[in-house]
Image 1 (cartoon, each protein chain N blue to C red):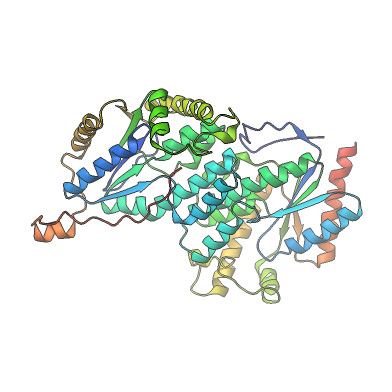
Image 2 (image 1 turned 90 degrees about the horizontal axis):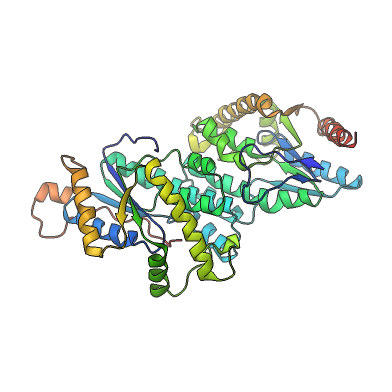
Length: 248
Length: 231
């Protein structure tokens, strides 16, 4: 477990390999929470302005080693944590994170860094109130990724590890290692397993039920327009999305 | 050949057993005269026939440009700054320092991660956390700590590059003006270095003396290191 947080807000994160459906689900959850008139802030992995140019340089020139990749993403996370996530949580906002420290624990270890070392890097982050892990068989994920996207990117496929010259083969081997790390983290961090093979709608219903239960009796930060006017003619205005960025 | 030791797990995906080169580190606060000494040592070592490679903070290809831009903005929290420096440090270690050591070079490092954790701890980082971040770092063959008191540093700064925002610790506002902030900040750093001297086995060199006197001490220590090797 990570250290417990002491703030008014709620932290909800989604985890899973590429193609597990987590981003689709958290996006739908985001809309649900907005519609409930609650203050919500969404953030995604690897989206800090601060390190964007460095990340781009490292990817373009294939300059990353497993350690520098891990450290740069921790820098990115730390920037988002210090400037957005933690202040929002303290203010009483529901923070939704598409990937969290567990992504680093799974991916960086799959790349070869030490398990204890990467856990220390993120030890300033707190244990989420809910951490959904989208579990899918490798074949399902590969099918979704190869069907939907133009091509798998170099680091996404773990090509830097030299597992195979073939991108798809490399992707499979790399993602399998990541799955193994996630599976070991289910108990370590109390991840809530979601069956990623279920239809989108069914999965979203399950997710909303779990979130609803977790939020029962909880009062977050009120939204000014909702609190003062109480006439929901327009959808509740939420905190603007500050960082939007390219994903790994 | 040298046995290779790391402070923690090192780079598990890239085993390294021994290297023929030597890693020599010069540490100390800002304006203590490190870069002058590195230049002098480099000239001397090359005259003696050693291949020399030098390196310093923020000089990595990956993070150098990004760190320079980030430092202009002053919006980085202390932990973020710390991790960004760690990324640069790892980049230089894996891509410059270790390859040079493998090739038998003497690597002169102007600062090592000790400076970074001194700054982090002064900014409120957990000392254990900061040390554990550098579990991938190589243990150097020789660490020489150039020590000078704050009055000496001030006279060097005044007659050198002048006071600046970061060296005065203005990001944490040690005082309401550059001069006072510099004094407070640098004395806190000296305190951190003094503490690390025993922990990491620094060879402490009195850097309040003239450049040549300091340089002689540095050379003597380096020669002793090379002698030890021959026995």
